[in-house]
Image (tube, rainbow, N blue to C red; front, side, top):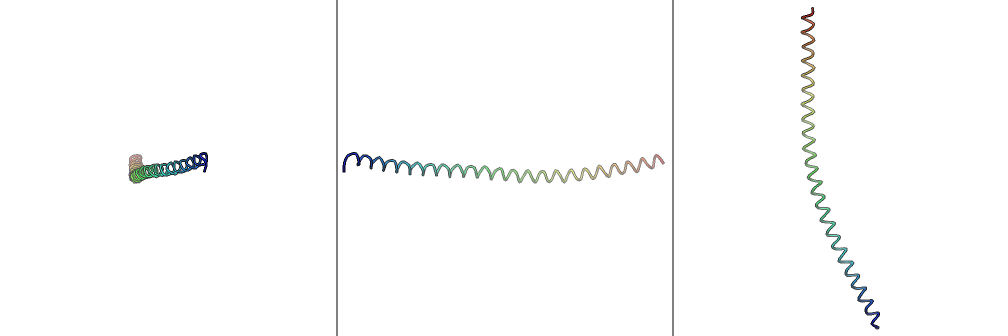
Length: 85
């Protein structure tokens, strides 16, 4: 084989090995990034669940307060009718 062919084959082998190493490193980096994103998403999901529970509790509390306000208004109306009569 001539020297030119030998140099070309060595260059080809080096390029192939370099490309494979680059692909493997990139794959590991992407896997690491995906794991980190999954952890963040899990954290947000937990926070969202807590927030949903708090909103539900506040809505129930608000409904109770609204009912109390309606009852108080009804009592006031009844008292005004008695006094005005």
